[in-house]
Amino acid sequence: MTRIITLIALSLTLAATPAAWAADEHHHGDHAPAATAPTGHEGHGAHQMASPEEMQKRMLRWMPKAESKVGARLDPKLSFIDGAGKKRTLGEFFDKPLFVTFVFATCPHICPTIAANLAARVEKAGKEGKGGFRTLVISFDTATDSAAGMKGYAAGFRDNPDFIGGVAEASSVGALTEAFGFSYMPHPTEVWAHITMITAVDTGGVVVRQIFGTKVPSDEFAETVDGLLTPGGK
Image 1 (cartoon, rainbow, N blue to C red):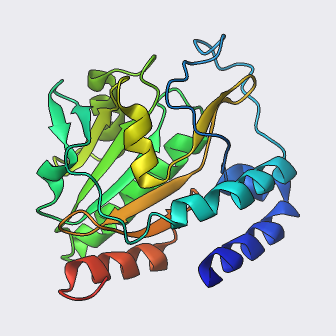
Image 2: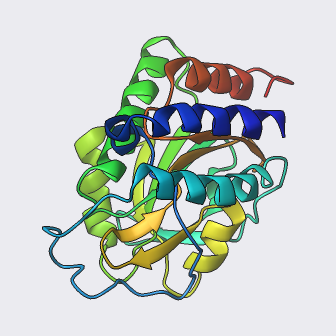
């Protein structure tokens, strides 16, 4: 609870500067497991950011849900399709620590920002000899994104076999995103409204932390990596 209050306090500060919110936060609405993309998803010329006040409201609503997943063990049978078109279960990745983020590939700014910052943190950790983990960048937009497209999407940020792009399956995207506490919904002007976060998972599949926002703070990420790679750390 203390962590949530601290993050909310930070959001109130950012809300005073709309540009800061637009650059750093995209916390969003209701989870719609079976939702399809709204009309006009093919073109993003009309894509509009929510107001800072609206983003703040969404964060207040959905961050506690995401935080409630910390300590939960993920179902190893939950699956997605990787860039080679192969069905992969989460359990296949539980031999190493794992970072997971959900995006949609046609997002014009928020998703690529978090992906780029995440890739930079991963690269830095690798250079420091702390690369013993994997990263999954998974699209929840099953109606539009393809496995091959997500392979290229991930490679565009970090061309490394442990930085893996994929797409959820239409039949199970709801269960997959729910397990991580990831909330989203189709939106008439934002295309998809969603919480922006990265989930850290330990060896064995237990959620140990949610990192919120698009900046992926270097110190928070490094601390999380150290905990994941240190026996008994976390």
